[in-house]
Amino acid sequence: MVKCGFPIAEVAADGSSVITKHARDGGMVTVDTVTAQLVYEIQGPRYLNPDATVHLDTATLEQIGPDRVAIGPVTGSPPPPTAKIAVFAPIGYEISQMLFCTSPNVTEKVALLREQLRAQLEGHVEALEVTPLGVAAQDPASQWEATVPIRVIATARDPEPLRRFVPAVGSLCLQGFPGFHHDGHAQRVSEPWPRIDYWPALLPAELVGHRAVLDDGTVVEAPVASRFATAEETAQPPHDEPAATAPASGRKTMLGDLTFARAGDKGGNSNVGIWASDPAHWEWLRTTLSTDAIRELLPEAKDCEVVRHELPHLRAVHVVLKGLLGTGGSSNLRVDQIGKSVGEYLRSKYVTVPDELLATSSHVAATQ
Image (cartoon, rainbow, N blue to C red):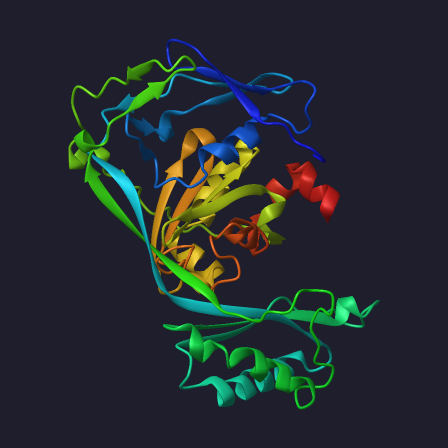
């Protein structure tokens, strides 16, 4: 894992493939690492491409050798009649800085910091967010175990109001909470920088030419689809909510002890694919991760539309959290701007696991 290589796809004429890698490179190719790629930044079981619509719920994986995973022939259908384009434009300016707070009384210290900055910046900036990252350890073994980073960020339509930010933060060195400090080795923030927003849009596919330019300059026009899919054909298939079933006996266990996850962004939406490596855990996973359960496990998504799908061949539940990332990764003010760690956050939550699954899970037994 120190220096991973890139995967290689050996694609056969029937549409099947084998995923592998160069033997000299680090990393590994397993059913789980290939699953991580298949559930990454998708909209659901139907994945829309300019050349075809891929039916990911037909994909099957098999480990056929060391660092060799076979993907069975996957069903496809015609592509959508439109291509997605990304439009970007400046919407103002932002400035941010990392500060640090050491226990005890971190909550109260952060509250004071927020109040002091608002007193100086309110009415001058459009948005001001003060976000503590993590919690201090109890009875810390070192100063750093007792220290919590705090990200402070402000936005405005024009750069001039944000020039108040640096002196406002600097003034707290002598009148802020006890132990107020920043990283003395990091370059000091001095000027605001442009803030960019993202708008996804659709363009008729016939307006987007496809061609390949070879080494000798030869241009090869790519074939275009003979027909395009209807809206019904490209729509994501609905999945019924699983019936809530409480285990006869079980205990609270970290979800990540029995699952893996991959997360990313689709514009302003966060998507998470979470799957069970062990086939014996699939039914438990799909019934545990209902839409209501996901909302409970991820309070940040309480105001989001949650779209849930199942990929049984991959033993995966795929979730789209609409609007969690605002209008897009370039403009929202989250520290995890494009939702890369939402899946790991979900895995860190505790859920009830039946005793019979815990008894057969070697990973859980090793971590308990």
